[in-house]
Amino acid sequence: MKFVFKKINAILLIIAILATVIGYIIMGTGDKTISPIILIIAYVVLFPVAILYGTKKSK
Image (cartoon, rainbow, N blue to C red; front, side):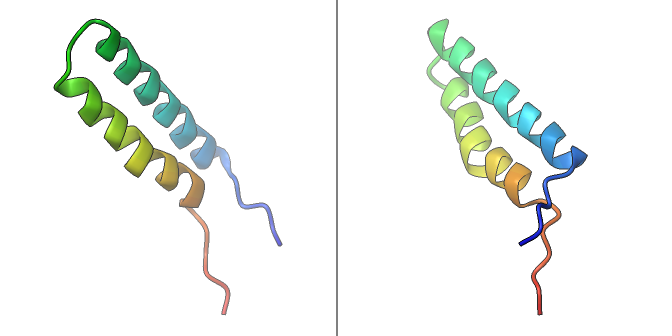
């Protein structure tokens, strides 16, 4: 198995972590509408994209 985690994956992972932190900070301020949206995007979209981006299926 080949390690395919590249620079773009690291950048996407950092963006996902920042989105998660921002979501929790906004949730701490009392806003209960935008913070769940940010957290869902971070957990459901950004983290999987950061992990799976650039992987190719072998034949």
